[in-house]
Amino acid sequence: MIKFFMAGLFILSMVFGCARTSNNPYTIVIDGSDLSEELSVRETRQLENIISTAVNTVTSRMGIEFRDTLNAFVFDDQPNEVGLNRIYLSRELSTDPNAVLFEVTHALAPYQATGMYLEGLAMMMPYMNHSASVRETYIKKKLGTDPQKLIPIESVLNDDSAFVILRQQKTNLVNYEAGIFLGFLVTEYGWEKLCELYSNRTKDFQAVYLKSLDQLEEQWLQTIFPSPSRDTTIINLR
Image 1 (cartoon, helix red, strand yellow):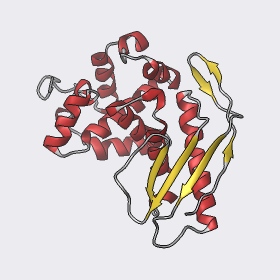
Image 2 (cartoon, rainbow, N blue to C red):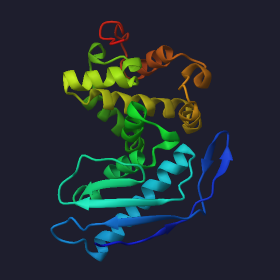
Image 3 (cartoon, helix red, strand yellow):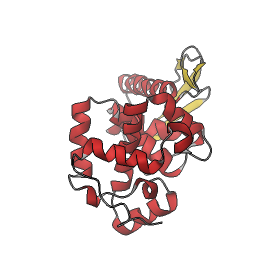
Image 4 (cartoon, rainbow, N blue to C red):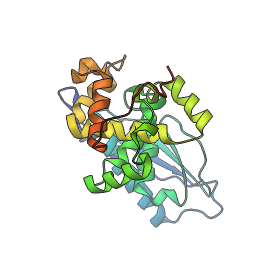
């Protein structure tokens, strides 16, 4: 089993409920023992750097500490697994910073986020690394141009209804909507507000944004569709 260790430095200074990172140790352990051909030293160092950048990104954006060991397991094919403080990658995806950032977000589970709040956050992290024009193209590709076909955000962020949609429609639209909506919140209101939302046990949008979830959704829809938004009652699964 191949294991390499790297220390990153982090210290958190709290600002309005969020934090910036520097000077605290964490460790990365890379395990490629299940590969048909072992990782080279160059590949391992490259993956260490990609993972470290991803940890920096998640912790600085979400204002969380990471003082533990992050285990990275690399396989020939991408496994369908997630776990706290561990990531699972195919050899191919291990060179993709966006894929690694997606997996690291799951592994760190900011504010113990679960369900669609965690899945949406993982989708949103690499999405926010792109320019506004790239994000606009991504929105059109993933959400289409017909607002009537979207799922109400309240249903998207509710695990019970979201999983019903995933099971019945067999679509990733739920995940894409969650990630893009959270990206809108960051673009309009900043990371600090999102940190506050995620640290709020009941996810009270009104308390954090001074707007209801319905109002925020309407505002979001106006940014991606110039015409009036859909009737949110037509596919509401509540």
